Each structure stands twice: as structure tokens, then as C-alpha cells.
Image (cartoon, rainbow, N blue to C red; front, top):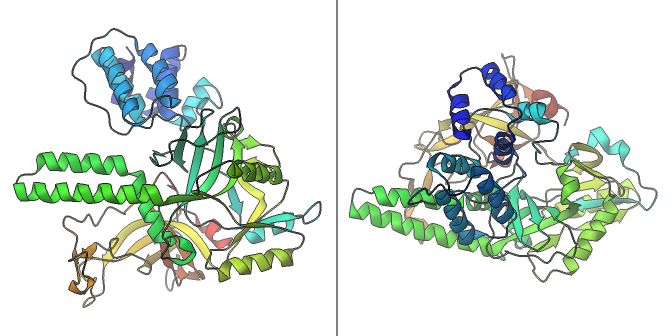
Length: 489
């Protein structure tokens, strides 16, 4: 019956019709459980590809299967291939229609277009818990709130990678989630010692180690690009498997098989070199509820104590200093810039963690940055090496009041090119076969700039000296900044 409800909702065109249908089914506890498991971002099953099954025996109920899914896979009793085998067993023990529901739950794709806001209104506030994230205030908006008495404030290096939620279960099993809740697996870090008798979460940013680079890590664009690839590992390998099966010639098949081998080697290299700059540790339940009232200085000491118990060198405490004046904080900030870092973050020692923009911590950085949406692209300049590829992107603020073309900062691959020979750069570059020039449209891009300027003869504004920092994936950021937010910098 649950699948029938989902199919009915999917067939309805009007939101009001869907909501009325759901209101009539409010007392259906199993339907509620289905929607909560499929829509709650704090619920993850760590599986991106559903295993193939041979038959549906129909010997267990959907509710029993969901409870088993929660106990064994969601809570990480089984991981990796063991988790997939367990899911396969659950699917085979259900009837065909309930098996389809369980697949949709695992993939978090009920196909009903019922939003989180309505579900919380229907079932009660907080039923669907979103992922909490504490943003940093702009310097000019909150510097007056920083207090240097009572033991001083804390200034830290501004981490420069991909934000990661590191969740550690009581038994030490660890999972990694992006800012918006997309799970990914680091096979070389399956367990981390948890000295607490409760589930905890650590906040940090993912970096990729490279001992040949400054500070022993890849630059932001390269490192974030590698991590973004890594997060999509399962989808990439599944897509290549499908292309291999559908290859029309032996030559095409061999080329795809080699591409898969190269991808696996790249993923393995990222796996063993991914590391994390970390700066906060929270009680998981408090984080899920959107607030942890423990003062930051104590959370920081808890994190230091936690790292002292860890044998891995993959977690690095973000460099910090306790300061008693703004001048001291500025000297630390200048030290970070001289080391090639992005800047610093200044925080009140006793600030709490809250799912909001904190008015008790501020960014200290030399350049302004913003997030814009990519609306199109244009070819490279005629006669240049990128003439046939992407020369730059057309970008806008969320309200369309800022429009700018940006060609600076794009990598060779983002423009659609690859080396003719990987081992010999002297042989030049070529267009990537089947490169999708429209793949970036609709994505959010981080951009740095000097200041906002008025466009001549237009009602819109532009940016002076804009440079692409990185193209964000939806699991990291899916909303552009508006004109007021950008201007407030």
C-alpha cells in the first residue's frame, strides 16, 4: 500500500493536492517512517548503487526491513560490501512492491516532490532534521562583538578546503558527510578511537596531501577538485561499468576499461592522501538539534585531547592562538597570509555552536569572495589555445543584480581540454572526447574579486578583477549570494 501512496503522489500535478492527500494519511505511522528515513539529511545508508536481486520472497514486512536497515546499515554495524550484501538480502525477502519502496528510501528518492517544510508542518517541528552549519560573519558586521577580556579571544587559520562533517559512532566507526549531507567513504580510515560514551561529530575541511607543494597540500582548486571527484566515486565507477557493457567495439571497450583502471588508481591515491584540518568537536545529539552550549574554548580543548589519543596523522588541529587584543589577532592574520594561507577567523572564547551565522566570530581575509550561479559559457578567444573550448563562464547573483563574465582561474580540464600525452606535456592539448560543455550551468561557483562596479549603460552591476576559486557541487553549496550580501562585504 505504501508504494501505491507514493505513486498517487507522484501522479498529482498540484502541490495543494499532494498536501491534502498527505493530511488524510497523517495517522499512517509506516508512511511517516518512510518519509522521515528518505528525507532526513542526518539519516544515511552509505549506499549509492542498489544491488541486483534475483527474486522477491515476500517473507518479511516493509516495517521490519526499515527497522533492520536502521539498526544494521544506518548505524554502521555493517559497512562496504557487507552492508550491500545485507541490503540485497532485505530486498529479496520483501515482496516486489515493498522492495521498490526500500530502494527509494536508500537512494532518498521517493519521487513525490513533498518538501521538508511541509513534512515538518505535518508531523511536527524537527521531525525532519536538517544538517546544521555555523557560518562566519563578515568582519565589519561583527568585529565589535569580539571580546578580548576574560582570558582573551581565539584567532585561527582560515581552513581552505572542502567542509566535512566527520561522524564517529560509539564503537569508533567513522563516516564522512559533506556540508549538505552527501556521504563518502575513506577506506583507509574505517575506525577512529572514540574516548567518549556517545556519538560525536568533528568539523573540519578536507585537504589532499602533496609533499611537493607549499604547506605539503594541494592548492584549493586542485585539492577541492580531487575531493569532489572522490565524493562521486561510486557514481563514476557505476557509470563506467555501464559504458563498458554498452561499448559497441572492442577498441572502445578497452579504452573504457583502461579509464576505469586509471580512475580506481586515482581514487586510491586520494583515499590515502586525504587529510583534515579540524577545529570543532560537538555532541552529535546537540548538533542535530541545532545548538551546543558548550563554550568554544572547552570544545577546542576537548578536540585537542581527542587528537592526542589518535594514532593517525590524518587529522590536524587548525593552527590557533589565544589573543588579548585586536593588534595581536592582526599579527596572526598577517602571519597566515605570509605562509600562503587564505586568512584567519577570530572567535570569542566562550561562544556557543549554533546552526546560524554566528555574530561571535569574524573572517579576516584580504580579498572579498562570493558565490554566484553559472548561467552559461563562452568560447576562448579566437586564435588562443582555448578557442574551441570554454573561455569563461557567464555568472549571476541569485537576484540577477550582478552579472559578470569570468575566464580567470579555470583549469585546463574545466575548459574541456586534456593532454595529448599524459607523460609528455610538449605534445600539447586536445579537446576531451564527448566533453559536456553545459555540465556547469546551474552550478554554484566561488569567486574572489576586488569590489563591485556599476555596469555601463545597464541596470546591473559587475565585479572588478574577478577570479574563479572553484565550482561547488550541490552537496557543498546550492544557493548563490544576492546583491545585498555581496555588497555588505
